Length: 269
Image (tube, rainbow, N blue to C red; front, side, top):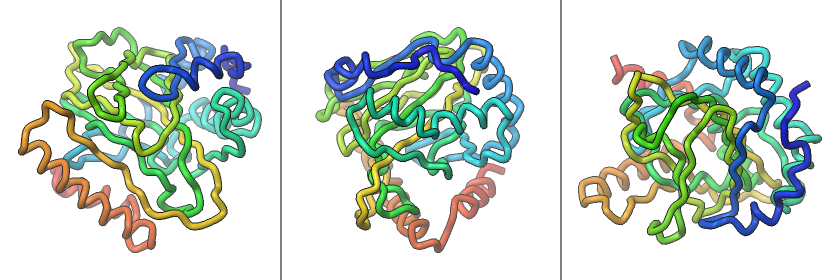
């Protein structure tokens, strides 16, 4: 059984709903310390199983295959996908009828290495495979020790006009939970710059509401920041175009993640 240090999230509802930028909350020491240490070690042990996610707007590694994860990592994900935790999450967010995603579409273990990045974006609004699922909540748990602001690994949350932001160090055993919609812009856009070649580690879980009708495909939407130049904006638009094509093909089961992973590995050789 996974125990959280925050077993009643309802007392933080006002803070979540009324937080600056958009609805979100940040907790430190989210898990029991020993459990967090075990999961951290398990992430290190499965690094060879991670798949590269190299596109123009993103440079990271990910794993959403539970069969390749460690025992405590699987226990944590199963608990965070359980009815017990989801009811707690509903009390925090005020969103009813949340459902988890056992397939971890776009989620699971995420790793960024030196010079990696994730450009500012709002997440895909409808599940790529389950067409009636509307995405509502992101939960990101971090497993990093000794980071500081100079690492460029902070998660940054941006206002709708991209002119204001809050940011949090992705500290060991901390979590950020936030509402996802077309304006919930976030990311870590600058090149990750660790002092001692550390890696940035997290586990991402996403939660949905079943709308009972097919939703339009709305893929992840990357946005340039106000100080980005013309070249950066053009590159971002081109990558967005490619992502739209891939999302369409994936929804219609013409391609899958493995196809894209193999394609990326060819160009990484």
